[in-house]
Amino acid sequence: MRKSTIWFALVVAVAAGAAALTVRVPAAATDVLLTGTITSSAGEKMEGVTVSARAEGQTFTTSVYTDDQGNFYFPPLPEGKYKVYAQAVGFDAGRAEMNLAGRGKKQDFQLKPTQNVTKQLSGDQWIAALPADTLSPETTEGREGFVHPMTIRGTAEETTITFIARDHDDAKLDAHVELLRRLASDVVAREPRARVSVDIEFQYPNMREAIDSHPRVVEAAVEAYRAVGVEPVFEPIRGGTDGSRLSAEGLPTPNLFTGGQDYHSLTEWASVQDMAAAAAMVVELIRIWAGPER
Image (cartoon, rainbow, N blue to C red; front, side, top):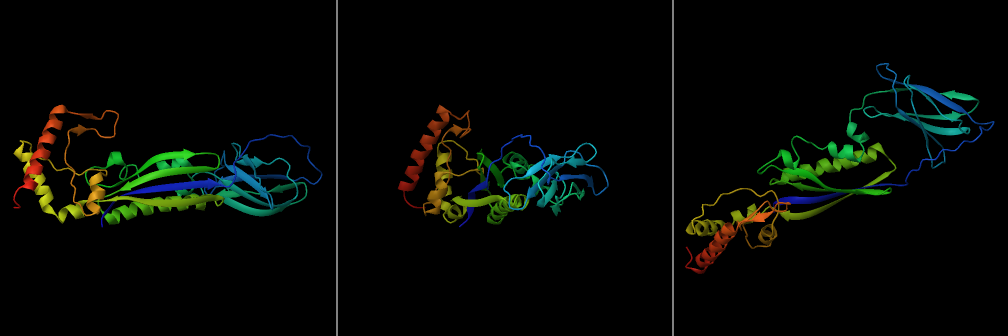
C-alpha cells in the first residue's frame, strides 16, 4: 500500500538545566590557574571560543571565552583530573584530559574546520539546516514531496519538534524520514548528555493505488460533472482527506470539488454558486450509480 504522509516527532531532552551564578571565593592554596591559546589550523587566533573544564566526578562545568588574541583564563580551579574542551561553530571541538597541580597549567588548542556543521547547530539552526531550496512546502509543488516542521515546544528539560513528511513516492518518503533520523542522530553526536527519541506515526496512504484499481469511480464523477456543465480539472492534493483512509479500507473515494477555497487557512471561503453546482453534481452522480451498469 502506498504511503503518503508520516508524522515525525523528535524529542530532545537534556539531563539537567543550567543556571548562571557568580560567586567570589578566595583562591585556596591548592588552586591552579589554567590558561591557554586557541588558534585555527591556519594559525589564526580565534576570539569568542568557548573553553570548558569539568573535574572528574563533578556534575558542573566551568566555561570561559577567548579574547581577541585567542587567549583564555580560568578562575582558580581546585587541583585534580579535568576534561577540557574548546568549541566554536564551524570547527571540530578540541579536547584534552589533564591533571591540574602546582600554581599554573597551560593548554593550547588548534581547531580544524568541521566536516559536518549540523552536529553543532542549536534548535533553530537545526531546523534551518533542512534543505530550504528543494524540500520545503513553499519550494515544491504538484507531486513533489516535502518535509515540514509543524510545531516546536520546549522547556528547560525537553524540546519536542513535530514534522510531517509527505510524498507520492514511497521510496522518496522513506528518504525524507531517513534525513530527519540522521539529523536527530547528529544531535546526540554533538551533545552526548542529550537523550533523543524518535517516534514515527503513519497518517494515511496515497489513494492512487485504490483509485487506479477502480477506474469507474473517477469515470462516473467526470460524467456527473459534465452533465451539470462543469468541466473537471485534475490536480494533485498536497494533503490528506477522509477519502485517503476510506480508499485504504476498500471504499474508493476520490476527492470531489465542493465549492470551498483556501482550505485550512485564515481566508477559507465557499462560493454559493460553486456549492450549488457541487450539490447538483452529487445528485447527478447518484443518478448515474443508481442507473444500469455500463
